[in-house]
Length: 160
Image 1: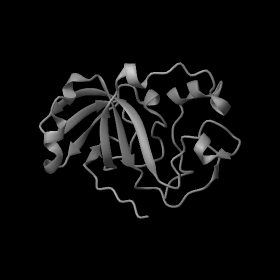
Image 2: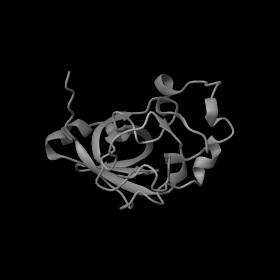
Image 3: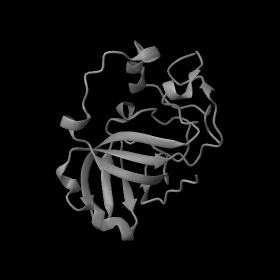
Image 4: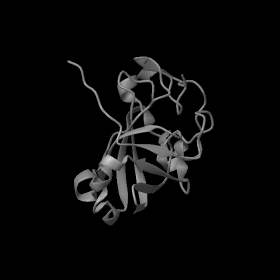
């Protein structure tokens, strides 16, 4: 089976290299950017402005290959890739929840940007708390470490 996606647009962000980027949106508070949606998809932005946050799915275009065991940014131990949020995955798909600042023409204006400039966007979906919020009670190896994402920055361990 061959699965193929076509970008609907591209991120415009202040990050031109992987090193030094926030590793999660929580570490990117106040960092603004946009998604420039391709003209043929701009009608799909109708009514998006009514939401405060969006999920953005994107292709991690600077990642080559994958590792099933990785040492993630917030730990010194190796973990299975599916137990991490590390980018070097069998399918290099990124997911971020970002604050929606507005829509201007075919640009989606965002805050909490933790993505490399010119990253291809696969999809945008509204965040709806009644659907998406859950009371999680287990955080695996992230327990006691996830708060560090507010200040931890990317290094080059997963760069192409």
